[in-house]
Length: 450
Image 1 (cartoon, rainbow, N blue to C red):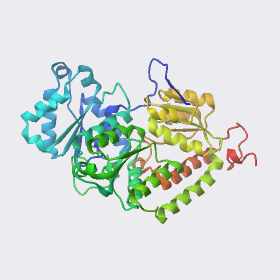
Image 2 (cartoon, rainbow, N blue to C red):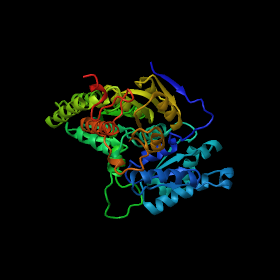
Image 3 (cartoon, rainbow, N blue to C red):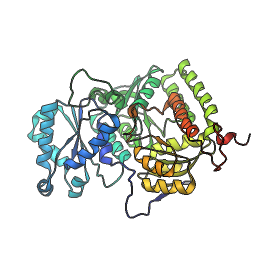
Image 4 (spheres, rainbow, N blue to C red):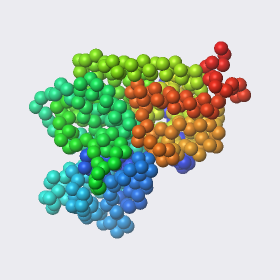
């Protein structure tokens, strides 16, 4: 049983976690013609916007209610109303996702009541979905904000259905999935003759395509019509434990059966997904998918020589941490340090002696004490890796010092194969050994004894 322990420091040093406000706003970026609206000060919005632009290298639609000292005391109703009116008038959006910040939550704004009043005073907003999400940045992390936002979308936008479509399946995509991951999931699902409704769909909105015209809102993503029809799907697949709440809400509203998959990284996890698609569709796995699986098996045979016995330090959001730690240990590596951002039911299953809810400083200290040979986390770990003198494999959010973060693919058979090669090549290049001073160039730890 993995021991989950909080950091005992009185402050965060080189913070790991991103706020749940940002996580909620990111989820709305996966809807078509949507505008995330952060209900708080301009600084809160600007900070999150910078991270998103640097990670995706795209124009990110983001707005703020621009609360100041006076409106914080008197209340944010007027600012929220004016923001909704301006966004609707200037962008012709169909969805405004309203994510609260710590400022609004600390003051105790009645957001639901404010929106009812705004609706009554502005009938022209009737064609816009106003979706409020409570995401104070003093609690939770990016993963929890994303989870709350998707559950709110399901609760407000999914409509009851009269029947079932045997060829339609819902995919509730977790915050740890990149646009490239979502494209891989879409292709795998469609290979079984199924039509996936992916929520949220960053694979359509932030996949790096160049539009032919300026669009002030999100460009692509899940449409309101597709979300409304999710109640007619034959099954729902929630990818990541933090998506279980949205799947349960959809089941309560429309009685759609659901399955929660803890991840899609690595051979056993992908096999579970493929078996589920076989059951739902009634079709065998296509030959192309079987070939991809065979390629992954060969990559595992090639890569395990370099993973075997390697000491790895990991820091990520809970569900991503579980997926990556399981993947590495399946190839023979040892997770000697595991750090995450917030509590989660997933943490007890992480294959490591303990998981610390802490920051990048905790990761660095534990990695140094355990003699870690590889660091796996987002770009904020680059300085720790440099001080430790070990390579860094960048994954998660944000990745701002490398190109192609949006297209990084780790899920599915092909994604796992690419992941083995990417991490394995780092280990070969660094040429570290679990036993210091006994490394032979080009020979991995598992080969040393032969």
